[in-house]
Length: 89
Picture (cartoon, one colour):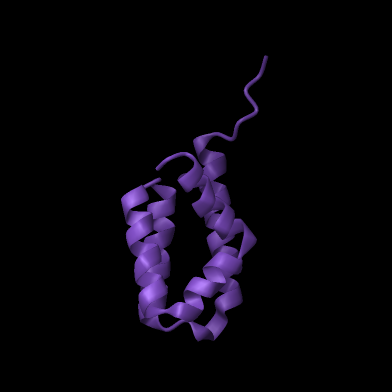
């Protein structure tokens, strides 16, 4: 029987693809502070850092409500964050 689960490289590609797609959609709306928070969240998701994800999502929600809405509405990014929550991270 083969293991069909995605490997670490597949997951990394999924994370980068999802965040890159959302970043492109944000365009010029994202000020440097919002982009910094966005990239910190990306890194925390890549590292499966549950504490970091919680901190960065909370920071984005508090400081950049519009970006928080974009994150939650972007299907692929939301799936990755929910995946971490379901895994108990």
